[in-house]
Structure formats: C-alpha cells, structure tokens
Length: 141
Figure 1: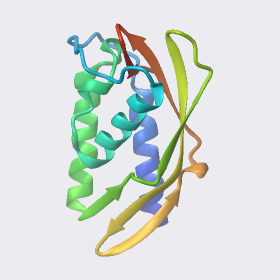
Figure 2: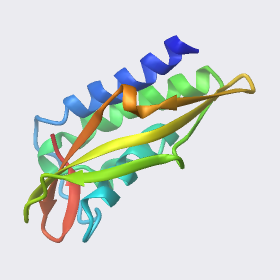
Figure 3: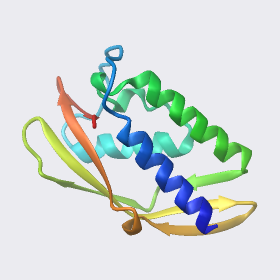
Figure 4: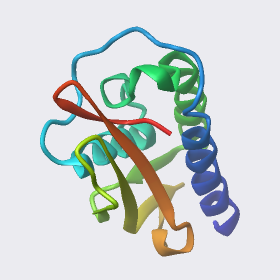
C-alpha cells in the first residue's frame, strides 16, 4: 500500500508540475472569491476522474492535463481503487490580488480491494499555485 501512496502523490505532483505550457481554450468557470476552492475542485476532480477543465487556467495546457488525469483515473479503475478527498485541507498563503499558493494537507483515504488506508498529505507538502483569471481563481503552475 505504501507503493500506491507514493504513486498517487507523485502522479498528482507531476501533473501539477506540467501546468506550464501551451495555451488552452478559454473557460469561464473556476472558483470566485477563495483560491482554496479552485485547488479543492482541481484535486477532487483529479482523484475522482472528474473534469479538471473548469479549475485550470488558460496557460496551463488543459488538454495535456486532462489526458494525464484520464490516465490517472484509468489506473485507479484498473486497480479497483477509490479515493476519498473529504478529509483534505486547503490552506492559502502568499495571496495577492492575482495569485496565491494553496497547501494541501490532511488525509487522503485510498481503498483498494476493500482495504482502506489513510495517507497523510503532510508527507507530500503539496502546494498548488493558483492565479486569478477574470473573476475566477484557477490552478496555474
């Protein structure tokens, strides 16, 4: 299970690191008001196979990220794994009018073959950079 924990965390960190790149189509959704809402929406979508597009800035290469998260979701399905993000926490730091960092903490619950394990995110020290696009906060590395 430790190997799965490492793979999950590394996959998300690598996909977040890929956030610099080609322009993507504009999308008007995102998180207004609080940068942590954008980070939470992004992480929830990433781990549950949802659509990350509304939470990613235009410059982040939405199509590349979507492909990466589709592969990640497929690997969860293949392993019969479920991910519960409800115990994660999101702490905003270094916030300006146009950018912020959101540190993801708390616990990620991973269930594989009916065996659940809590993975403390403190080991990963995952920081999600967000920027304001229009009126919405979006993940943008």
